[in-house]
Length: 299
Ligand code: PRP
Ligand code: ZN
Image (cartoon, rainbow, N blue to C red):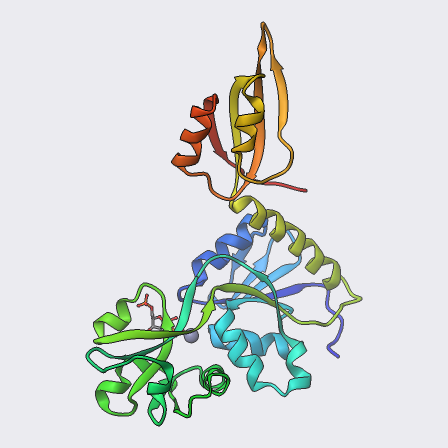
């Protein structure tokens, strides 16, 4: 049990692929910070919520050890660290929300030109990775007897220097693989940034702060892909036009002054709306179609 505290601590990647989006997301949740001189700590100015800026690989451990209550980290990093904990300690840090940014995948890759047809082709080969636990679990599940070579970085050069025959590493744009004459042959897991949290329930002010942050986060995540659709149509065509609206809550229909046959429709739609969908609505009788971004929302 950790001592009661009245401020919440969130661990965030100090510099790397998730840092900027993590800070932007917390900003969208209304948190404002003052950064310390050494840039390792951010003091929450408008709420008792502070940030610790750390290496991404340290984030799950900081949560499991009770140093931070929450963290923003890649699902792959979280899973690797959870697998390293004793099974009964894994609840100390768990995924609470998928955040929709930093999408990438952990994948197996071979030097270009090496023949590959199926996973069993990797049997007896050495695979270099910084995710030994995830890889071992994957190989066992797939029934492939390959050797896991644990490295702490620069996995992509392992085949060239002869320390491994294949690699298992994160792939985002694919540029790193291409630059090292490697080709992706099989996915191991999909990843993205997630909010990780301790399973502990706090009786001190941290409990309420976590609830507040999760509610705001849900609002931010919900509007991220939401659009407000505005259009005019005739009463006669209304049913047909409405049928083409992407899913969402029931639209608001209002009559138009001086035009008894006309209505104005306002609908919140979940998910993106393509030009094709807009053109289909236009053909069905919608006019003055407008798709607007939603900035904030409270359900
Ligand atoms: C990952 C991975 C590759 C690169 C792949 O490292 O180890 O080097 O990104 O991205 P690409 O397909 O867009 O080229 P990352 O930047 O996450 O650093 P880390 O593993 O050292 O934390
Ligand atoms: Zn890292």
